[in-house]
Image (cartoon, rainbow, N blue to C red; front, side, top):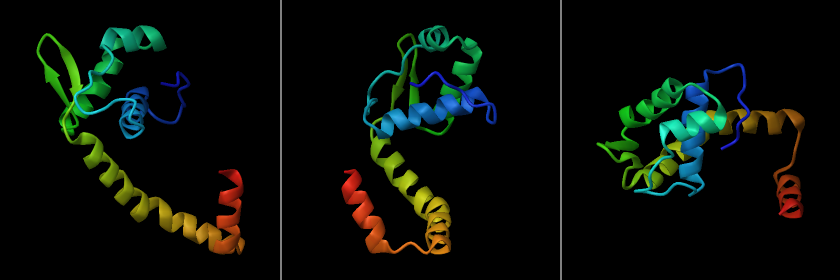
Length: 120
């Protein structure tokens, strides 16, 4: 996880999003343990309560489960569910803004595809 925090959003929300990104990137898979609260707090020099708050949000959203005495674990099926959810979020919220910007700039889809191929 990247230790740089932005000042516009609470750290616990940024941490939650970073964990979600780790699940989407398959750094954390279904059934994997999340790093301990103490480990994350020490590594990023943040309050353990901040880490716990981020983890609790993940539990509340049904993405992570607590196992008494063992820690927090990514629930089975979460990666697929999360990927589907994030795709929908992108298509409904971000993509329309991107399309408007493409149109505003007068970019041609073929030109965009050529640029993408050169970058790959």
